[in-house]
Amino acid sequence: MANDLYEVLGVDRNATDDEIKKAFRKKARQLHPDVNKAPDAEDRFKELNEAYDVLSDPSKRAQYDRFGTIPGAASGAGGGYVDFEDLFGGFGGMGDIFSSFFGGAAGGGAQVRKEGRDMGVGLRLTLEEVAAGAKKEIVYDRLAPCPDCDGTGLGEGGEEVTCSVCHGQGRVVTVQHTFLGDMQTATTCRACGGTGKTINNPCPECEGQGRVPDRQRVTVEVPVGIRDGQQLRLSGFGEAGMNGAASGDLIVTCRIQPHEFFEREGDNLHARANVSFVQAALGADIEIEGVFEDERVTVRIPEGCQNEQVVRVRGFGMPRFKSDARGDMYVHVNVVIPKKLSKRERELLEELADEMGEDVNAERSPLQKLKDVFN
Image 1 (tube, rainbow, N blue to C red):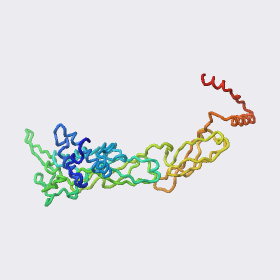
Image 2 (cartoon, rainbow, N blue to C red):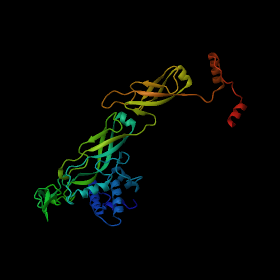
Image 3 (tube, rainbow, N blue to C red):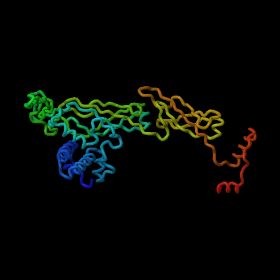
Image 4 (tube, one colour):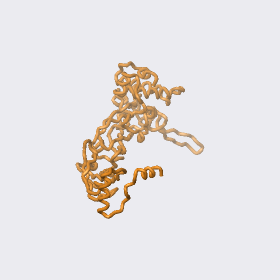
């Protein structure tokens, strides 16, 4: 983004959010590769999209106005919140949104879909956010209701009328004379796209569709205890329908990131804890971190605990989905054997070995230890 972003959009630095949106949509229609066959159209459209990505985001715009650059800006909508690997509506960015917008106009002989399609995004979450619940902002591109005509597609004084070509049937019947006789073929009306209706004086902003490409921001409330792969449905936040038809839904798939300390299994948590061989032999109470901030979990190590033994702590796992209960925590014990002993520690262990009647090696001299290193 070497050029000034305001110049790319063709607005001044005091432009309002609405002015930036309108300028972007106007230029995007001119530069989109589907309609502009200039050799540099694709590069200019990409530059336009990147400029809009910055100037449509209040925080990014503020940084750009102050410093003139945006670190890591405009690699795609959604920032660190959203993964666009799974967009049911077929949209991976503003370029694809505009492709669908141009394809949604009546024409081409294909029947126009009036209702909006469902869209989907993947939302990355930490284990702590799942345990406590969270509100996450999602930023994504979609075909949204046109703000100028409130989604109707009607311009000033415009009205929806019966198609004069198909007379409201949505299909056009053609007759072909062959030596076998007359053959009738019914095709979708190109004038109305199969709807049977056309618009006199359509809205210039949306070209009569009732929807425009836009960047949407929505806050998702993540319920406590949700599991990896579970989905949340936000009604009406998918692709907007044409001319006021029903919008699709936004389907949010929750993706829980791996944790450095805990491993989740259903509503239970697995963790590892180091104990000394003395604690393992005599038993001890140790503390480890819980999944909630500042939570401490007391783990009772039983007398004679073995390496890799699992100790269960009830009620300190993950909160259960739509419940006040919690799962359990399973602590995998790692018995740590010291590699070096003080003279007094060795004497005590030798006394213990003698008491238990066990044979142990005598203490090695410094020269013998040096030989062991070289060998």
